[in-house]
Amino acid sequence: MRALGLDVGSKTIGVAVSDPSGTIASPREVLTRRGHAEDAAAVAALARTLEASDVVVGLPLELDGSVGHRARQVQRFLAVLEPLLKELPGSPRAWTWDERFSTAGAERALLQADVSRARRKQVIDAAAAQFILQGWLEGQRRKDMSGETGT
Image 1 (cartoon, rainbow, N blue to C red):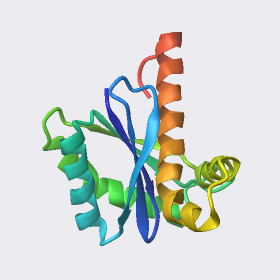
Image 2 (cartoon, rainbow, N blue to C red; image 1 turned 180 degrees about the vertical axis):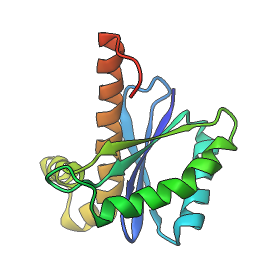
Image 3 (cartoon, helix red, strand yellow; image 1 turned 90 degrees about the vertical axis):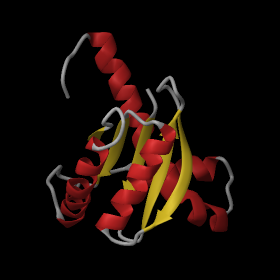
Image 4 (cartoon, one colour; image 1 turned 60 degrees about the vertical axis):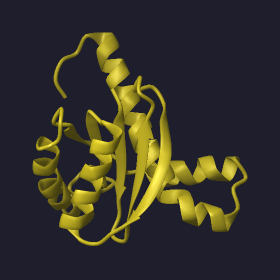
């Protein structure tokens, strides 16, 4: 099970990918936003190339857990992406994951790794996508271990 993780921002989309076993997420790249249709096509092409079974999109909920403007923008993007995923071999499934603290977590990890400020700016979106995807992967493992079904 290979999965893609996305941190969808207003100007860029950070992309992360899991290893084939679905255990470890790694940052992959940062895509420049070009509009929902072009962005969704680029993500679908990546999903096809990497033979992803799942695409996990960070949902930027408000601190109180409500859906605000940013989360609605991500939901609009998802509405364009999901039909494209269904056309791919294996029909990868789209998931959302609460990403409220993903950028802060990624920033902390980059600071601990002593990554320069200039380099952090270049990789923060992909690192946030990695943070999102790793959280989802761990959630899937916990669910599998407890015998839960559904999402």
